[in-house]
Image (tube, rainbow, N blue to C red; front, side, top):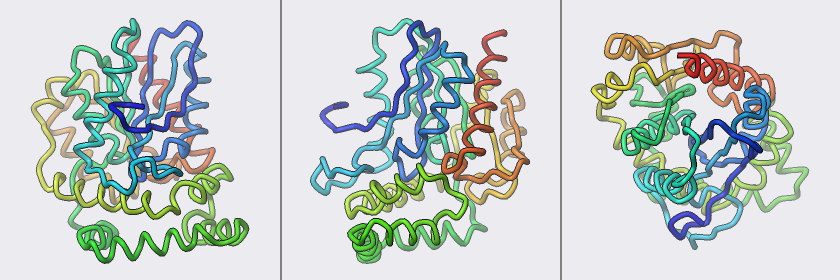
Length: 290
């Protein structure tokens, strides 16, 4: 329970950690999607760091909040509360790793807890709207309409009520031919629920309202030596034009482009999870040497 909300965690604890890595998911904020990534990151850091992925409130199998909808702002507060509640007295430095909109959330958390956070890594970051993305326009259109959101959520829960083998077939076909067995299972169990889908779309609506504004470049510049971003080559959530803008605004930020052909949803398959875990571990190791 984090500030009275049921919270799903995916965690590997180190016996003698020198660091605590906190992974903030994108949207859908389902911690279980990051299983392969969390395991690989733990291995890559040689068991010297505890790694925790913190799910978003009500993006999970059980409707613990009885249909209540949570905005992105409330999800940011929730991550701050988690750190203050669980890591208040911890000796270890905290490294934040945020994926997609989780990168935006991570920067906000970093801003509020500057003395607690040692460094921040944004993976395939979604930091502002991309006017050229048809997908974003479509999701925004559905998310803004309460009627359409309910319709999509009903459809998701209907699919989720079918026989397991049929659900798996549909998920494989429409979501991920390249997805790992783990990711398909997670989508079947957690995502195809009415309350989860409503929360995914409600959070998306509040993200899109907020991301019409510019990121806080002053903060990024102030912390540029402690920040890294990994962009994908063909990612409409974090296009390379955003990478160029960051390099102009905060030249000391560590910027990388992944050219191995992994996608925005890297955590849904093993090769993507392993590659990105390697990238994050290397950044952490380099920073520790400085």
